[in-house]
Image 1 (cartoon, rainbow, N blue to C red):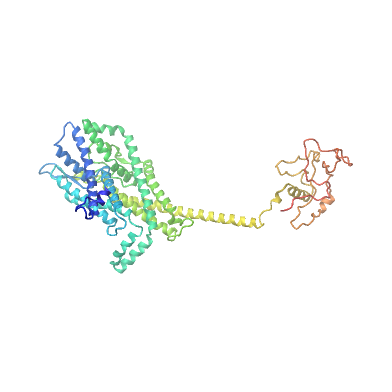
Image 2 (image 1 turned 90 degrees about the vertical axis):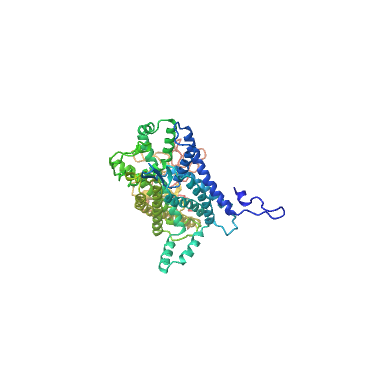
Length: 591
């Protein structure tokens, strides 16, 4: 579509420069094409059902008029049905939301393509102007359809169509245009409006906008979107469980309302188109207020009152029976908004608004509990507004009197969503933010201590690895044994590999091949000699040590002159054990 909108056919003679068609004509054409595609899809479905029906009502023109009415109903316009020429007018205002998804996607795509085709160097037309031109083309086709579909037994109500159709087009195109605006475009657009306000109002608005920064608004929109998705998904899960539980009643409604295959197909398509509405009704149910089926009836988790007689529609089989709910039902339905509030608070508590930016990023606003509270309140407003808008579009009238309103009340659903998000999301966001900041402080302190220990170790102030050698451990053991006054048993301490020496025998003598280490103390770094032997060690001398092979015995392996026997086979004495008690223990230096 972009080549046609940028350069059209030449409207002049050969040597003149070809004149370009204006961009606005392409934007109008894009909106009209989007409307025509949606109307054509609706006409195809209706004509298919009219063709396969064994008893069609009216001709092809009547089927096309019905397709146009359904297309207008998908935009939120209210239809009216006249029972008789002089009878009352019955409104039909429940919009099947699955039908609404088709024009929304087509209009969004047309706006995005128009924004992509807009030259970036052209300052005359910005995204808002493009949205207005696309909406104008869409509304031109809508006005033509509204005029051609009037006069039948089912037609669009003029006042409702005049209010809902422009609002629908401008809302969809406006949201698409906002996504393409520069970050500071909205702030600049507020400046002319603020200049026209009185001084007190201007001061209040500026203070409010100062608290609502762009970062906080972005996080609030993300958290509110997450909570809204959780509520809608919980309603869809509850609806699915109810339909599966009442599957026999659901399938039994088809032969009661239709007697042919085409009738069953049309009823199935209508049921599928109303599934999003039923999911939003279930979401209002789990929030607490519930929904109504007319005549002031209420279907909620606390209690379900009697409803007026209704046709056996398949989706109505999921409505709970009359009576008060049990504690189990309250707990199961309360899990959905509880989970939504927890996710909303967790999202905000983990964001930069609450805990500050990451390393290497400049802070934008002071993080803390004040920023967390402001962001949570923004998310509460956004979530409540989203639920109110969705439930309002999913409900409406199906007649006069008792069926004047069917579905949830938008203000009740929106208020309940705000209450749940405030009561659950605010404490969760404050606690998650505090815990995240606390863990960050602990991690920073631990990293600083590790760096300080590494610096001290590099300067030589760290722990000495020589203190844990085998020789020093034996010297410490000997000093402790001598200071105990003979209370400690006479056996060698654990060697470096973790193997214990043999314990003393029952007679109190050590086994051959092992001897006690004489009393000594490890040398210091100053190079001083061995420590003096305590008086207790001089009064109670240690027994004579066993000879060490290679030092106290001849080369041939014979015993020394003192008659000491060599150690038994398989037992190797310590390598650095001194030969006499009066010799100092050879220890490793500190470094």
